[in-house]
Length: 207
Ligand SMILES: Nc1ncnc2c1ncn2[C@@H]1O[C@H](COP(=O)(O)OP(=O)(O)O)[C@@H](O)[C@H]1O
Ligand SMILES: [Mg+2]
Image (spheres, rainbow, N blue to C red):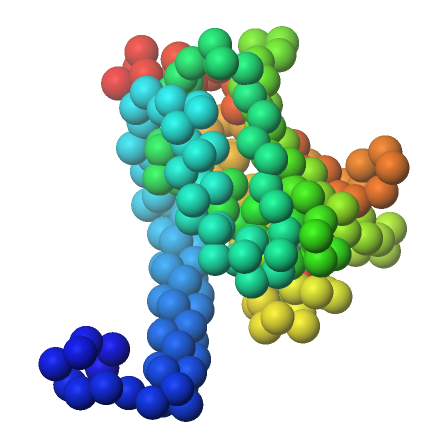
């Protein structure tokens, strides 16, 4: 409909078209999440392991959340050492993990807030962190955020169904890693994904 060949649309029509597009994107994302959870439950989720360039991945995810950032006037800082290199992982799933964490971080950010996406190597692992300037993780939900259909506050208000973090946890576990989410020093939430480098190499050797 947005094609010029259909004839020009007026402003109101373009606005409606935008709503239709946004709701179909949201439905598509929800269906994808549910299908992923179904294959995880069936034990049928296999990782497609390969060499994943860390900086390129962070930048690709930053690009994927560009509209979300603009909509909420939030800026993203990507912070990784130039020599961080690559690690063994499923590129698509790593992006999905970081996209979920970033979209939560952006959703809770105050206007003009800053979200930081950073990576570093430490103690045999690659750790990737997402930090925001939102309210942090309230004590009463801290133990539950990774459970399915747990959605609160900003998440629930924007119509989240509470599946994002449960997928993040499953994908991290499939990588032999772990994820934590808590309140950072100075407020705001801090999510830490830890990809063990040795475990990923063992899997590769076993193939
Ligand atoms: N960065 C964050 N800051 C504060 N609360 C968060 C953050 N990320 C997640 N949460 C809380 O965890 C809940 C579950 O997150 P998620 O599984 O992604 O579901 P959804 O985004 O659909 O609500 C959110 O509804 C929100 O209450
Ligand atoms: Mg979410």
